[in-house]
Length: 580
Image (cartoon, rainbow, N blue to C red; front, side, top):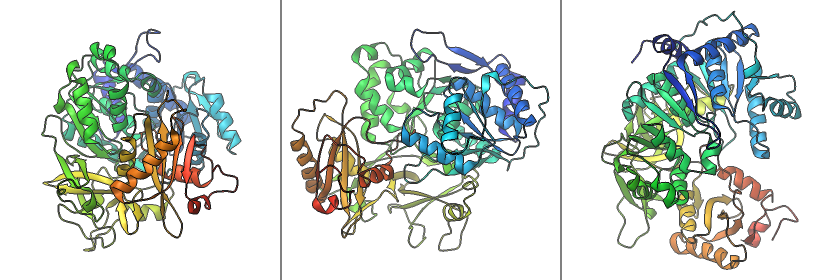
């Protein structure tokens, strides 16, 4: 599509060719408060140059720079300024008072060792205090909008293998690690996205996903710029307050491509009212990506049915698979193509096999996540390292131009994850830690290798247990299932009650129903069932349940349930004085 060899050069060429074209359309935080803020390519380029010169004067070239913005326009300027200056951008979420988010941010600062931080004027004092609390008071935090102009910017000597930014992983299964993304990786994945999704030059994309997550940064901010198009931006907070705003923005601002994780589509099905639905126009939505967490065919069907009266065509729903270690997109099923599903025997999945279920046997639907977008994709037996044929479940291994260089300053973990070698001696594969299978060239993701629940020699997928539990009651919201150690591993279920639920409901009966359902469907006895308040189950910014974090909180006795049942053997694992 273009001859640029780094992303900064590409944005500058866009500004030179179409200076007055809308690059960003930033929607107001609250409805009716203000008009959308339009940022042209000229303004974006000028803002990035001004800040880049200031960064170069302070020796930021080759150094890490935290980008800690809630303001989406300022984030875009700061991120591009880092690229313009030859610095390594490190996008992180702004602190919001939650302890676990602060701990994660402090861990990223310790790992990345940044030269400085860029933030909004309103948020810079909070960032500075957070840095000081965790022993990093020497790192200055500057308000991007008040940085003085600099006339000394010079185009850096960037090559394709120059590091563009560090994308810290969500930490859903382990501590966050900085994925090293080069300009080659970034441009290769942009080409892959366009090839799979058929996004045309000048397209208008948009959404609400946070920019410190790969799907938001690369898919909803950088991809429109790569296309020479426009990005329509809503904040995550605005979406959570009123999910209909996402769908309204798609119709009102003629967005043709948008996407989100599965939970967001489910949230829209449940919370968009009939009155709001009547005012929607989704007829221009051409590509609706579902990715970032396991794609549930039931959610796609429910969303398509719910919003068909608003003009949504079922063929626009596009399941995809990706991860930060591959920059973003790994595979996708293009909009308009036949969306396939596999109905799998749930018991066969436990032995890593794919077969049709017997009559009345437990079953599970698997979503078609399309064909590989870049390079090669193998399904590999993680124990023998032998590639598996279609119809067998194994670990997803990748090799291609989009695969990142490794983890920042973690050579051992980089070697383990990014240099997977098959039994035949073929090296250089990214071991994703995700499990899947292939049928007719299509990828079907079945779960996480690390999240697998192994009970009595059987492999169970936690999301299956969670879905079974959530179906039991309309009062049930988010859930997580995990195992705790012992002479025998025990399954623990933490189940939220939805906002507005009456806590004088028979919670003991609901707890018993959870245990009975797991026994009936999986022949598993739950060692503990906890019913908790809304918001207790932690999720990453992309919507993934943080099972490892929930297991840690449970074992530390830090969960405060509304009601619980815990077996004596599991209670012994908890600190003295924990609620019984």
